[in-house]
Image (cartoon, rainbow, N blue to C red; front, side):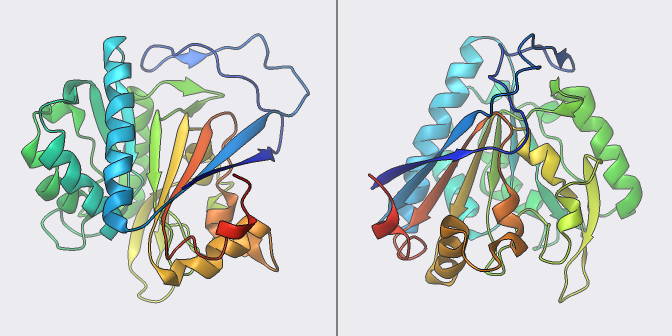
Length: 286
């Protein structure tokens, strides 16, 4: 089930120009345009989490291979969580040989401040489920070092991103960012009450989980919104109410960090299972 909604964006985004080389800053002669661009928000609703993960694996594998044919890297920022875990397992099982993994550079949207062998490590999960099962150069894996001092690591990781990812408007441009959404509306490690991380001028920030007090490192909202494409993966009935509030702009929807993910010039899609999308199906225009 597939639906599309058009949203006017904030600010003065402009059409994307051609892809530039790694580490270079794009210039666009159309950057002084004042007309607001509209972005199409794509909603895809699947009967189950496994069917969602299958569809997204097929989608992203095709885009990785298309980028690889051009000889340019595909910079991918990934998240942790159960749905990405399922997605990674499908990539490892069905696409380990057919995807040009040598063109992919893995980055992380966020990381808990734990060692890589810790069960809570997003990198550790990705390594175990996917990276250990595909042929990818070691230099293409850019992990957040959760075991190091959080503030120093946030600065170091920001530098690593800038040295490896093309830029636009002085910010890195990821080819694809994969996000989840918590049942409190958080995304990346940007939690309700910490919306300042959406507009932070930094590339990476240190965040604190509001309940556990655990420190995390996260990409900021401006970096996420500068991506070429953003995909939310959300499953489960516990996400349905917040997805409805964000979609319909109900009540205090702006208090949910996920509502602030609004790409400047790229595209955005929500991949939902039937339970997560149950409250918006009837409102979407096919």
